[in-house]
Length: 421
Image 1 (tube, rainbow, N blue to C red):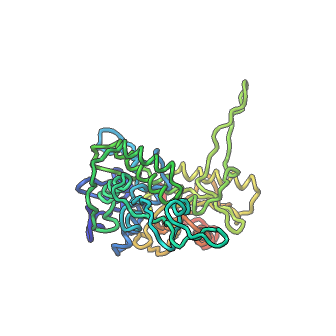
Image 2: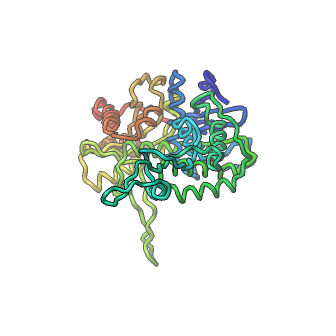
Image 3: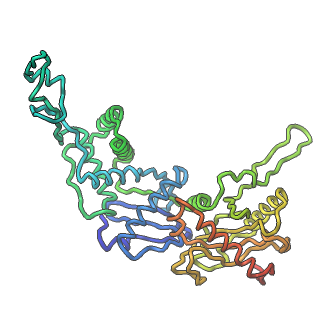
């Protein structure tokens, strides 16, 4: 288990080089390592690091699916799918800590009182009424319904198993405390049947969420009974990067901006080909920005070999040319940009803001007549992006628009000198 000052030592920011691309958590009985994406700046405070780890899990859970969560590492015989139900484990921990204990069912008990939660059926059966002059009964004592926790119920024992399992794997993120071991043997099939019964008769949303999480944990434990290692994450964080960029900056319906192609055949029906699809289309102040999210290393290394290649550059110019012709846009209304990760706290460029312009890409076969032909290279702080994909994105959109336009305005339409590859 990771404790105290060891947490920072167990965090690694990857380089996105071959063999160092995994983002997420890998753990076994002796070791836990959390891997952050390239460009991520870890905070100094241990509490903030724990918060960042939980936030990383949230981002991965939201922006990856089973096709992304596949590991391909040399030490394993074959790639393996990673379906560790991390949200279920966290939900069991949250519930336990919020309730300061285990889920317990209550047993109804009935007592004679002069006030309380009156059970009228039992009151009529058990209590003697006084008959008034008008022959109507009046009760001076009632049978009232109370409840008492019953810690011997099966559902409580199931919760004990799930709490112990979840703290064994992820409890170090919250506390050095380790709950006591379960009191009865693990019986997964019996436990799942009991949880299904509870789900069918429970109407409390919070309890239902807990029972679903416990069931997901048990199903995972049933599939991997002897596996001490567990993994949650992806070797393909570039997919997450694209989705984050599109969530923060992109419009929802971008199909009108896709250049389409087709074959006009001599015989048979014409064949339409799949259109080129830009990662994101951002619109701000009636201006269109074509964004290509590139999870490349240049923002960290400063090495030009880690920049988008010619095919990516030409594709972006094609996007811009298509949109300009379709909409007959003035030059100052259409822009192009690559969006890459970097660390605003420590970088090669001396940029301290969450957004920065590091240069532009051009095609020698095109002129510099249009702004969209000059694709701006924009770096975005990785941690900033991961914490700003929800809520109002207006400030981020304004900052990105300014970063894209700034170099074009400062260069006054003149291309900087470039060297051949």
